[in-house]
Image (cartoon, rainbow, N blue to C red; front, side):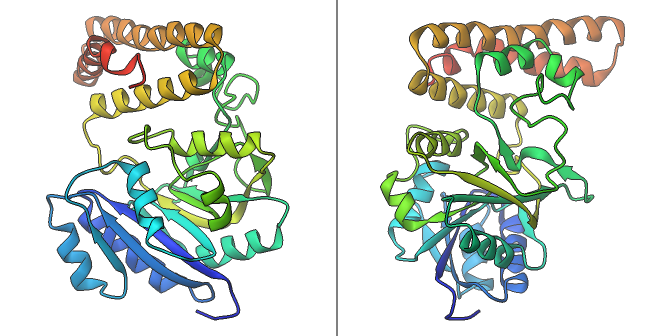
Length: 315
């Protein structure tokens, strides 16, 4: 590292991902050669001995041991409060940095003072593109195409698969609407100005909310393909129905916070449609295809439908 760079604090929030978190930390220290960085790990009361293993293997990282699982948004907020760096990078524990990923992202950000939020390319373990590094904001149209399955039928259509940027291969610098929290760089000044994440979002959509608030203030978010990481995704929440309930609840919270009353009513209908279309489809497939995977998926979507009261209010 070098003192010619502004100071950077890398924040990793861990929750029962011991092995993955250790790999993420190892990759940070091995691949970051230029940035003037320190690392803070906030452990959300893991039960897999994560905190002790992190302390033993990476004593150079600052470790915060929470007595409770306070969620992703609140954990990042609390971790950042303990730092005084000029820049902040949020990095998921289920990531591995490629050589120069953080250095390149910092260099890109420093070269673009016209923007305030920055992200890079994410890949799957096999090297294929993981397109979840950035998104567009939800809209009634995007919820409709998602609910009806049109977005899945036409994944490369920028019009129909709107939230995922359609066919864009994340191969060029581009302004985006949402940078995902797995690899999210911003200045401490902007973070404080926005008052960090809204902690009403326990997990999921907190970065969409922050980017939306930043966008309303005229702050641009930029993507660069020159900073790449592996992002596994979903490692801390393996139960599929639980994950989807949390995701739907977070999305409902977002639209109730930022959409008009009429749009919220439409959003509720479209999320219900989304769940029931999939439950109906897997019901048919489980009766005709007779595959165990179809029956399992039917059970998942039936559970999500029965738990509607948990996610429909967004609370």
